[in-house]
Length: 203
Length: 269
Image 1 (cartoon, one colour):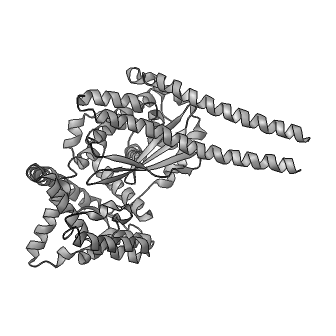
Image 2: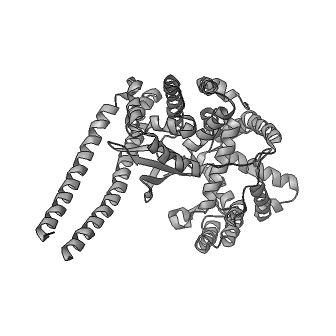
Image 3: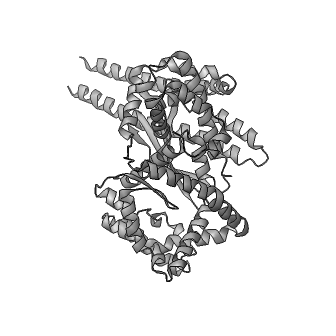
């Protein structure tokens, strides 16, 4: 009886360490990638386009772009789409996501910015890692949300100052799809950048 | 079950746990190597597609459905007009002015001005902290104010920065009302001031009374000071609005949504 108790206790403790391991593994993955990204951004001799290319190569393994695309449509709209529409949507959405991510990153030169990692939080099976991007004049809170895919920890959403990337796209896409079709949405996603910036209100 | 059997079982569990951890680590390295080639071949990313059953999509979907923030927008017609106005105001006036200002005024001066205004608005944060029963933060605000007003010479310097515990708490009366359980009411866009809600507008009025600038006479001077504060603040943030706009398919909705989410997260803190 005593040994059974011992075994159960050990198993419990084991599962505890697994959780702790998950948290540190997720944080370690994120930290190593972000550090690599920052070291690219700090390279003064590199052209901006070369930087962007290098950054995409670094972050692609930890971003689940494909899942992010699906989540912006959600179970309400995603499963019902035809295969080629899914492909097209993913392609356009991922392109825009990458553009916007790179644009945000390359606005800073990271000479005095540093990232502070706060204690990770376990949310069901996922790990959320709150971080602060601290510069001389500013502090931006960024929350990275990761889940464990088959091979490694992957990001499925980022919250900047409490604003979730997925939620923001989700409600915009929902809006379009509630009154229009997937083709309307694809058309909007195809719009070139300069036209987007000049436009103010669209129905 | 015999004791040895149990011990053996335990050993097996431990060993397999150890090895699976080791394998996971190796796997992740392999994926990294494979995945790095993805940019040249976009089709490969779809592999994870089939790995996701609908159940798993559900698991994620629940999270985002919980997070969904809706706000009533009965004034959409007015709001869109004001959004349009603020958009033009930003691109035609505020941005060029802030840019020129940034080019002429060196960064340490701008930082000093920013510190000064942050210090000046201490009453807003202090009162909000007290009304939210956040005594520690209220204490930090008071100490920070005393330190920066004296050692920091009227708040232009920020000696409190050395002590992370004294960081300003980013509280205001709109958030305080939120903490009391008062909802957003509805969305409203003010000219010049931008996105707000009924609740936050009420908070904003209170904030003005707690802002010493409000008591400057004549009123034109107070408005001038406020405008200068905005220009100085924007000189650090040129590009933020553009980046939001570029990423959006519907800028009006994107800004509304971002505002509501941002405020919600601040109320939670």
